[in-house]
Length: 162
Image 1 (tube, rainbow, N blue to C red):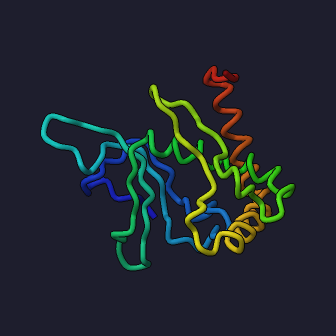
Image 2 (image 1 turned 180 degrees about the horizontal axis):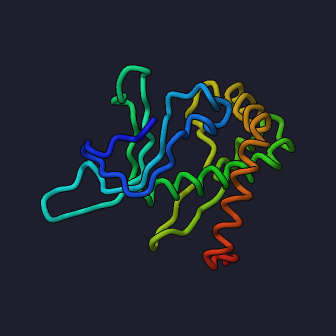
């Protein structure tokens, strides 16, 4: 299924047939494509670029398609990588976290930092975090393949470390 190029988001770089590789939803996903292009929220004289996940209901393009500025996509990738790293050692805690130390990391970005922490305000945290850890473990192969590819591309781009 071809991503539409006539809507407000103007695709420039695309990945059609994303439904074939959408993790555990592969071959049955409503996410039909990914694109990088000109953002749909552009104001006159101000142009931003964005990443978009294109969803299709089977009959029409869905309003649930998501468009994100590219830096947010990378921020999500950073958050996913940091969470995965955290959970590789979280088994040491009774409930997969230390209730006295819920901050995991502060990652410096643009003169400030992204604070990564366990959400202690979740009333079902003790149950939910165990389920999250199990699903993360179950998806290890799916995520690991993507982490390796991301690492390879970053290295090829010259980002070999700090």
